[in-house]
Amino acid sequence: MSLVSTDRVERAWQVLDTVLDPEVPALSVCDLGIVREVIDHGAELEVVLTPTYSGCPATEVIEASVLDALETEGLGPARATLRRAPAWTTDWISAEGRRKLNDYGIAPPGPVSPEDGVPIRIFGRKADAVACPRCGSAMTERLSAFGSTACKAMYRCLSCREPFEHFKPI
Amino acid sequence: MQASIAIKDDSAVQYLLRIGDTALVLAQRLGEWTGHAPVLEEDIALANMALDLVGQARAVLTRAGELEGQGFDEDQLAFLREERDFRNVTLVELPRGDFAVTVLRNAMVATFLKLLWTRLQQSTDAEVAAIAGKAVKEARYHQQHAADWAVRLGQGTDESRRRMDAALGQLWRYAAELFAADAVDEAAARSGLGPSWAELKAPWEAEMATILSAAGLQAPAAGTFLSTGKRGVHSEHMGYILAEMQHLQRAYPGGVW
Image (cartoon, rainbow over all chains, first blue to last red):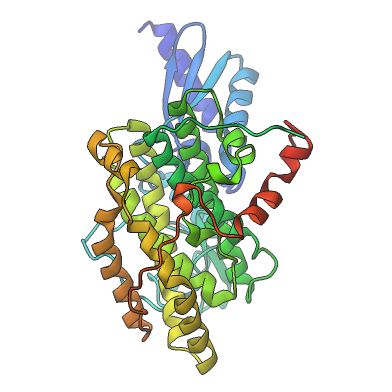
């Protein structure tokens, strides 16, 4: 790989770090961990993306904004390809991404719990403890397992009484 | 009006259509709740689960189209096939019923799909294995949610308990079709595309027993009834689903947003 080509790939990563997720605009696609690879094919740049959820309606918008940003910065022509395996996990969200999520008012996901061989647990209304992104209290409760987008659940803080969203660990 | 397409009778394609169509038709039924669920949180939950299922259906139908070989894409497969060419199990095409019917059906189907996706992660078809790696996480979450609600309704009021019992009486017998293996299953198991669905019966029954026992509910005794949706012979409800789902593409061929 030539120096020039490395430079093009590096610049592409810098540009991609400014492309925001349309549904969680606090995070760039790099923070989110969905850019798997940037490959310089000479004639064109290939950006390998992985979907977050099977039905995430943002996937196509993200592809378009990634290509737009690269073209605008003169790094094109570029194309985006989708890679499903290995499946995206919230463990790929960067430390910086987690901090940004919390500042934005969304409780970041904890580590994905490893498979423990128990097929199903009956939780009732109890769910994992999540710290309130506003006041930091651990006295919170889940209001709804699903939220405004596929990746989030609804919680409320019992200390400061504010509702907030939680990025589900998957 | 847009003419229908005909699908080649290939067992790998049929196997994938059974999965893709089951996800697609259940998504269509769950979508009917949008704006009508008993509480806002469940309205959102049902729409979210429908969205995951549509995503899974799109990926599986795309792969089925590639294997089928006539160049049909996910949209053509969803919108231009006739009822007899849909391979979903009958269970998912039954009317959405009340909230108890929806909760029980979601528990039954999500438990089944979770077990199926788990096994499909080892598919010899790399694309199917990749789709499964993502879908299994979604199915696990759907199962958990449906199980929580089954317990809440089963242990709730006399009325919610009565409705769960009625839902079991209505839906339980349709589970037999999930595990009635045939030549399509045998071919998939032989080629390594995926497991024979019969192999999922024991773990499915065990997980459903865990859920029903926590809910204080009793599954009806097994009978001899066997529905036939995955062979393309559907209930009287299927045509109405397709009429609604396919209307736009049939009336305005190739129409896009």
